Length: 194
Length: 189
Figure 1 (spheres, rainbow over the protein chains, first blue to last red):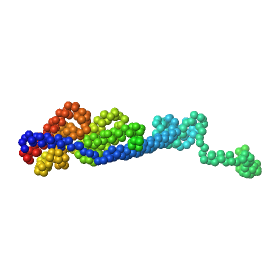
Figure 2 (tube, rainbow over the protein chains, first blue to last red):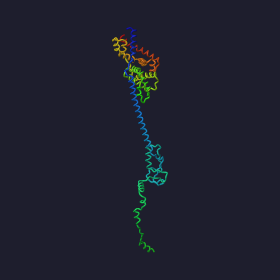
Figure 3 (cartoon, each protein chain N blue to C red):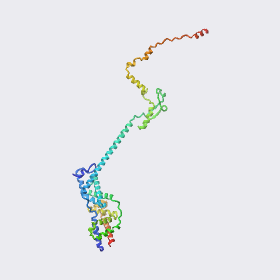
Figure 4 (tube, each protein chain N blue to C red):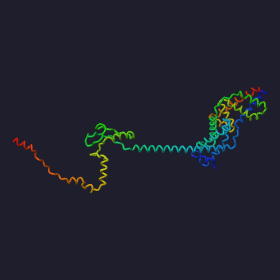
């Protein structure tokens, strides 16, 4: 084989080989498989989209619930910004009770309604007496006073106004006149001095 | 009724029957060229079909932004090319030393040019020769083997001027011819 023939052979072989290199026929039904695959992929994607929306909704609901509960916890009545703590017997001297801290000690309440700080301030305030703008300051009733009030409300007025048995007994007591006999020694001494 | 009417759920894809029919028409019109582009790179029917399906899924995703017909074809070709390159294993330089048995066997059997060209061993040899080309020559050569693609379309897929495509194709063909000639001469010269 001379050079010319070899060149021609190589050219023809290369052309034929390159022509058939990518001239392939896909398996039958390629379009149908493509469309089915696209349909399945879109269904999966749709499911993921729905799952994503559900997850986002659940997250948003949790955030709303958290914010709502936090807001309700924050609405604890904040103490006055400045309270004056008095010792018993100091100032007007009308108040008695356990007091912590030095007289006229000022406690600054927290600016931010933080729960922990509010609780600590509340604990201090419950141990102190707060000077109220009304004098005398209204104080909460004690348990004994509450019982008495209940008794007064539950008892008829006639019963309350009737004299008790002790009073009746006392009324019957008759006190005798006081008789003091003169002392014999004192009379004798006076006679001797004279 | 278009097949894609059932497909279009919750995505920026055509929901109207006309659009679904149009997409189906695009699939039927261009699926072969997309498949052949993928096959020219992957050299495997299964992988080429997977790449084709992925190409049309991307097409559906970007459907509204694609301009009519010719742009769609160019877009499909470019997307298929990139998907195939992504799926292709890393290119390894191919040695031509082990081609000797292939060529000698074909020559010894006395087969003609057409018969040799359709031979599986010859296809393997051509594939190895193409893979031995540098990248700037290999890519236009691979795309030129897809008979549906014109030179301007290859230029658009590769993002290079049309003239560069022609020049590189000529150089690539020259290199392939020299290598094939050397292989044949090495055993029969």
